[in-house]
Image 1: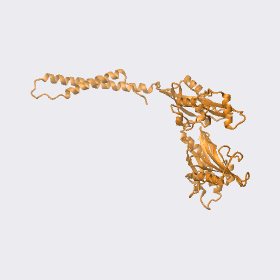
Image 2 (image 1 turned 60 degrees about the horizontal axis):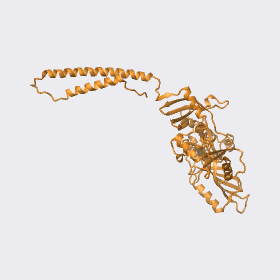
Image 3 (image 1 turned 120 degrees about the vertical axis):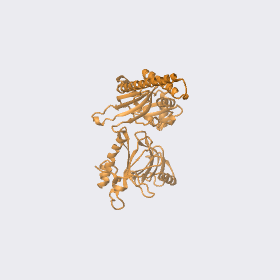
Image 4 (image 1 turned 45 degrees about the vertical axis):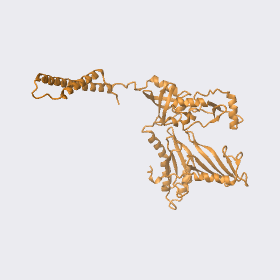
Length: 466
């Protein structure tokens, strides 16, 4: 919308017309003179004045309309004003340099629809220029290794002070760190006041700014990452970043994949490929081996082989959408509808990260997954007839890799008389796990089972396969 500004000439004419109209209104609104009045000349003068005022008012209105139309036409054809203007090449170059700097590159490493949804592990992955905590690095390194149970460390380590983190978050979002939905999940050494992150890589992604505009203090930037070798032009992802220009730098608002046709439609198209593959497999009665060879969960084949006996697999199996971490992206769940009190295990869970399909989990007969009511997962694993595990996991950071919380083990190979163990560290190893009683083991398993969620799946019978 173009904002029309009243010109000086237009303003003067409008005021003149208003004054004349008011004067005219005063004459018309006066009490009528008696019929035998002798003040005829005054009446004629008043009438003449009214006629003159009306003529002037009509002339002013005509000139005003002409000026308004002319000004509107000029405004419509004019270049955008400074309040809403395309960025110059120099401005885009400066923004591109900033987004490729250690301070800001982490903000384009993942998507966020609003500031509180920023994944701070991505922002601080290599320190965000703050890896200068005023501590003795060698001393903190030793404390980190002791806390982590490491005798040596052959990777880089990033130290970021707690105060620096909180000040940086406030500066770059205008919000408090305590209000962030995805804070750092790094080791925190309270005695030194620093977060520690050991890593042997970097999350740096080179950005190329394509276009942008400024509206007041708000920047809207379209960018892409440096294309991979051999990447087709149509496969290159475009992103839209919105940030305000603050006194200390950028204040970020959002950063989202911006496909042609819209983000929701883009995500739906990505998920549709998986839904189509499953619907085709169920319709064509694939067995477990065929599902597995097509990079899908073999569990689906267990249901197709019972077609017509207990249920119609096209009605029993299906897909559902559910956001497990409140980041605005609904995950795609593939599974079977439950009946009664029995909760069917999941087949697969997918997400979309920066325009690419991301698999969260894939189950098979020996490794089954269940969604818990706190948006975490339980993984029931049967390694051998004598060794079983139940591992509690959560989808970590924006990649949604499953990370262990804790778990229990029943390992009769390790100890046939007392095979029950608990661990909140390395839950896959019996060595080092805490021995527990059979009751404690069963209580853990029972509590987990009561939290399992039975999703309502849209049946594959509703899918038109291609």
